[in-house]
Image (cartoon, rainbow, N blue to C red; front, side, top):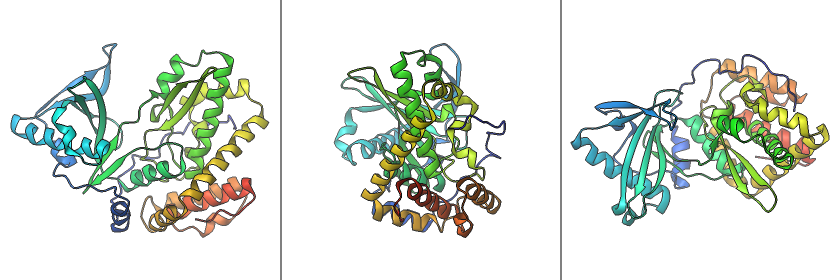
Length: 355
């Protein structure tokens, strides 16, 4: 990985949500990603008051806990428990009798302004979270690609014009870098290796804006040391921006502590090896989902997910990066993502990968 960074690592402007096309909606229905529940995102906006949500250090989290009238809350609570049943038990409503809504929080920053629902199992006081957001085609494509070509799986559903997502557990990337990097050399090497692989997963599928607070780290104790898995939690910037470096987490200054671990512990030959390992794993997942990916890219190529100036910029920058002209034939962000998959994997694996 190159360590050269630019100061302009922020999105060019606030991203707008793109509507879900009829083709994408049919795809989601085919693969059982659609549900029908009365509750919509706008219903949650009818809260009557809110208070700041503070963390354990009494600092403002920029989330606000919201409250509803008794009449609204009865309907909202019932539907939220139904949504959780779809997320966890394929809609089996028998589980909702012992569930209760502990808290509903509203996010005051970012593009999507999500609601986060905290739900408690009254039988054992165990709690879980899920999210209610405005449906955005970019994010849906990002979620679906995450399920198909990454090692991670997560449940999400489209409910008319509302997007429902399960919570992705892990330590926020910025907290992880503050608290966990001072570890033994063996674990530090594993952290650096995982960041290289995460960097490749993001770039191959063109998932942008992976600065430290947009991913989490899952730590699994192992026989010797620990295993680390970096997981994206923000998919709004799936193939939207025009700058190639926006899709490489190595170029965000927030991620420098992990970059420096790589510089300290890994030679360039090791970095190349880990990149090729990840490309091989992605190719294997593509082989297992080729038909579904072909359907997805066919729809994605016809959907509007960005603007002409950004599409032209990304085509030029990827042509320059890969030393090719194949991206010049792309007409949409969907075309670019598919071409990037094919070009990167064919170049490293020396065999054709067709989507």
